[in-house]
Length: 209
Image (cartoon, rainbow, N blue to C red; front, side):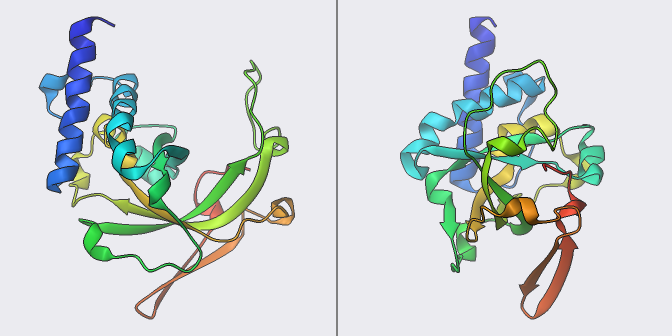
């Protein structure tokens, strides 16, 4: 990658950071920054780390975004993408969330997976079965996303990834080391907001296990 391209992607990261500081409505990264591929978008996301670690703490994990077929179809992908989780964004147990800290807060059912050991490089495709020996624990979780009033009719995946896949926080329940006994395809989850109950199953998203 030439220096001009590298400089432009760094400027794109600065632009994304400024959008968050100003709490601007989400929009695509301007074309002049040259974020043309998913690989470019991940370079932008990685370039945000140095600045965000100063206020959010170190990166402590990753989120999987675009895990359902409908949202993948919307942005023209056939696989998930990732975002980085920063330490101060992770909460545990019964917590109060201040809605004023977000522009347009959304809650998503999630599973938080703690990887217990390094997964080696391999030419063998990872599957729901052969990853199990590397998983230490699983906990129920809510992801806090902030789409900043994005227009979903014109959602560009490179800009979404550049914006850290909209991760804004997570609330994790107690970790379970007995997760192998659970049926993640059919496990029921329930969310109650203002006395309105929404139910789903963990199998509604693409399966990790």
